Amino acid sequence: MKTKNSTLVPEETITAFVQKKFTIGVILPLTEANRSDLFFKTVEPLCALGFEISVLAVGDQASQEQCYELSQRFPDNFELLESIPANRDKIIHKSQIALFTSSPEKSLIKELSRKGVVPVMPFDDKLIEFASFDVQQEQGNCFLYNPENMWECMATTIRAYENFKFPYDWGNLRKNLKKVFEA
Image (tube, rainbow, N blue to C red):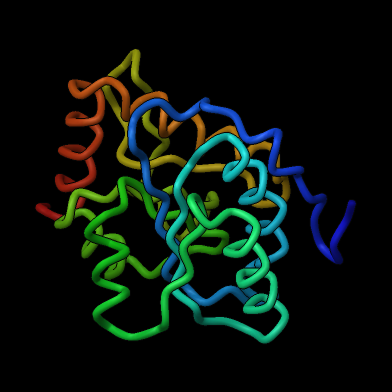
């Protein structure tokens, strides 16, 4: 069964891949300019794997409709919240990562770092101070991916979860992110 922009995953295929509560927050508008198509191609399989996704209901009409459909299909995994400041703060507070399909403003990344939320975002030459976390070297301060590849976006999100399962590594990552803004 297919929708306009994504392949639907039957509810009976939802697995228990995610063993530790891990919430993905989405707070930027879901619009064509912000690569909403990448979001929808990525988010459905993540819901099927058991990830919790909280989305601020802001964006174009088509995106709003798709978000509503996902919230109906995955009521335990996909949360759609009205676009008000309190809900934005709620999403940030409960999320371990913030998923971006386009480059966020540096001020938003700073806000996330203060709250302990790690950005998963596309590579951007304007944000050179951000590097993908390398657990072996204990370096890096976020997770970066190629926005032209939905599989890389999904794999990067899963890699963030895999690092989250190890408190020492996750703590180093969060410290590295805060250091970007201390200089």
